[in-house]
Image 1: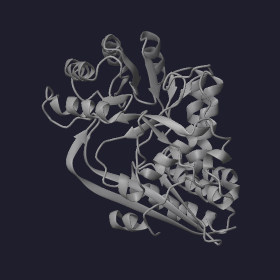
Image 2: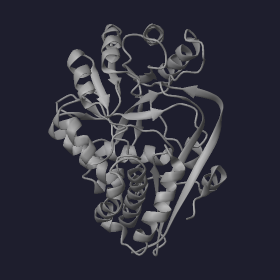
Image 3: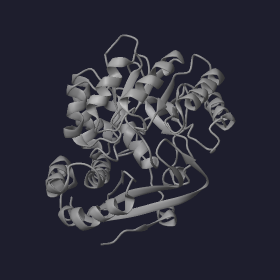
Image 4: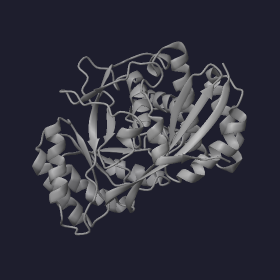
Length: 387
């Protein structure tokens, strides 16, 4: 089997209403999708990180496509190393690794389809056929710092839908106003629903510690990205000062980038994003690295149904951390971050998985990623990027 074509698509969709987090407002959702075709007619799909989407698509078409044509998709990890080496001198993080991620996921999709097996069977086996999910949402929707009603309504909606945990944004308001929002949501959902908060590196270490101590009083489970990803000592300072769990890694790249986080135990939870870290090949290595230090791995997920399916395939393979007789989701078992923010692309590019009565989603059992991509939707929302 040989690769005969590599196509890259940049998709965008306008939102009816913008939303914000600690860094910015947005009124657009976007995605970078990779389609790889083989001489046997098998097609694989992948998704790359969408930050800087046009540049990512250009790297794939201009730099990686010539190297991929004619290659055997089963050489996926060898190809990964060659792509990484090709752009290493230009930087070991960012756009080039985003691009590799989309290619790698597409290659694994092809391999699974070629042998008639889901990817998780090829990555080591199935530790679980269903994955508990938590709802990611609760962004800022109003310029008024005390306007909390919409967020409370959203949180109650998640609880009523059967989500067993949820995550909200902080860092975009004053400490007092953000705590007002967290307290309102905690009161609305009750004490039995795990609540996590994500600052998107909106604080320095001192401020993160200050708000973190108040978050502990509200029984927040984890504080995500309290400081900028480059500030490893800041992570260590925050982690040593607080009793709640510290999560991070969605802005980190490759096993090389995660190694210091794990070696210095700067976080309690690593959050590799499959569209950023280097795809499934690299995410599996990062998860093993974390497990060796008994640090939980809960991937960051943000994108279309393609990246959701890839994350489910990975999570299916991850061992409980630590292994116990009666594992509990989040505390022992990895869970899926299930983005609930508005995204016209999400359910159109590939069907959205359904939440069951236990607040979980089935791992796709079909070959490869186990999903069908709607190419009409891909072309409706985007364009092929040609070098």
